[in-house]
Image (cartoon, rainbow, N blue to C red; front, side, top):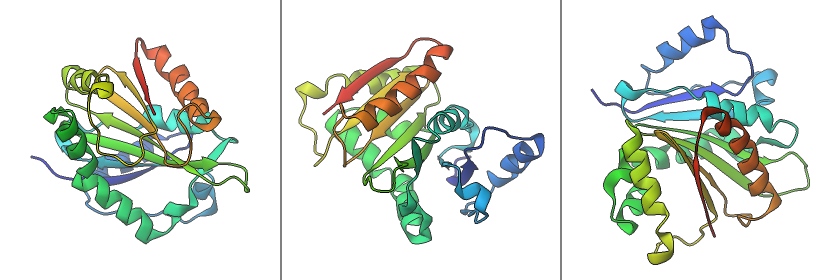
Length: 214
């Protein structure tokens, strides 16, 4: 049975067994929950959009990435507005971006993600504007993820219909990570810093593939 489930994970380094139990219960709900206490605001949250509950996955690697970026990046205050956050979540639920990729690359595998985890980041310095989002796409198997990545590798040969393309894609097993922004170049320090932190985590799990688009 397929359903769309929205879950919010707090990017804390410690998770208790009780929190894991609550997580399983939350997956059955089709609503957003908001943490308003001062402790949760200090962390970068992970928002998880589940398209197929049969293939539900955790957000451990994205949570680890957020923890490693603490002190350098913080959660983008844009999503502290319930309306702004809901708009972003609705965009993910619609799969408009994935459908555009599927059309441009002539590969319907892009629409087959079973879950997308996402965090919204901005530099810790108060006077620095600009945001970066990090997405973690899960597929039911490694073959589907590799199909998407191989299509992405051919982007230089295709006409892609996006106004801004500042993307870093990293594929490992049945997952693809996307680091994207409209505010920085791919070779800028913020993008490269997040990429390196992500690679440091992924390389502990084995081989990975990476593409930088600009």
